[in-house]
Image 1 (cartoon, helix red, strand yellow):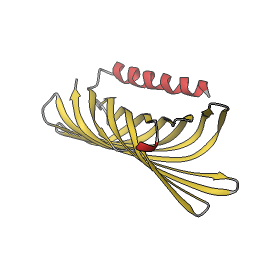
Image 2 (tube, helix red, strand yellow):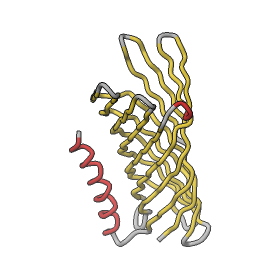
Image 3 (cartoon, helix red, strand yellow):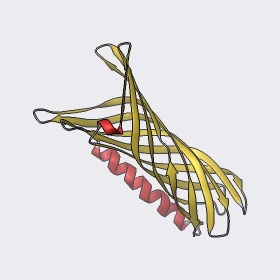
Length: 212
């Protein structure tokens, strides 16, 4: 699993390095608001568990825009703080919010290769496939847990230029996690797990972007 995460970050570096060498296309560095939504469906004791989570956080975008063609590379980083978690198990509903936890944190990073079907001097809009990685950690007074997952999905990215060097960016990432591993620790026990997952996340974002 560590090799997969090493490969992910290698792709992150190589994708932008490759783009930069092609006659130095314009680059963007943006940030703003992100509102992630996550859904998980799992089995426990032959019962289905459905979990939904809403969050609010910050988005950071680094990417290269098209120059001599319509392709660009968009990397998104999301730093979020879950606000509410609801689960359904055995016919019962369970809800909690950030006040029930000592800590709650969500981090997601994605690499997307977007095709910009709108590409002019004032507005760009692209969509493409992505590879994503997610970290979700939480703790109470008695339990500490962390989960890492790899997934694939799609990205949409738009940029409305205000000037040649500044614009308003917006978009969304959607990720279907296919494999994960993690741990759940208490004062008396330490447990780890890994395997295929059935998670889905949608993260809309909006903010300002600088163009170089």
